[in-house]
Image (cartoon, rainbow, N blue to C red; front, side, top):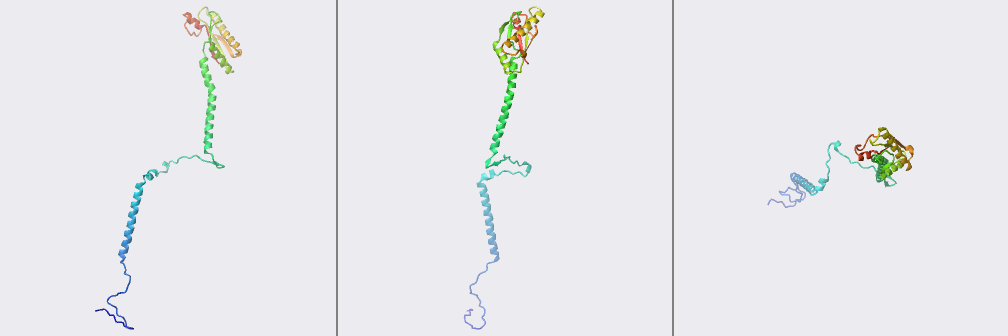
Length: 236
């Protein structure tokens, strides 16, 4: 056999054909590097699968993500009320309540200021050029009276102490024109006296006779002439 098993003390040992001593077997460098590359590839693929799966599984996350424009001018920042805290109290709600109260108060004052003007305008439209009384032919005596209208006239004058009233007296076409002029003035004065008897100052009432002017009905009929014997009032 080729093995030399004899001990040779102090002599130079010849190398054996086979080295049976235990030693580490070196791994080729190419195999180690390939193993690391394979592990890295597995991690990359696994991470990609996990990212894709998590994105698909949570659609709410995608839906909730706002689209942010690259243009700064198109980004709208919602305005938030400035909050001030005084001694730990949030004054935002207090400011809103105070603002609402101020608006309501101003609106209320505006309505109160405008109300008399509107009522006055309506009252004037309803009362001006109305006929409170008619007269007997050729006389300044009342033939008929509209008591409801007279009460409204007096009430308006009492509620508006700075207001004054003008009375126009009229006559029908019966008789001479000069006489009708005199009768119409007497009729205006008669209604003025009637208002003074209802506690309206005479200084607030003016009266003028208009004769046969401005008829409200035809003077060709008895009923028409009866309507034309009248007074009309106008507030000043």
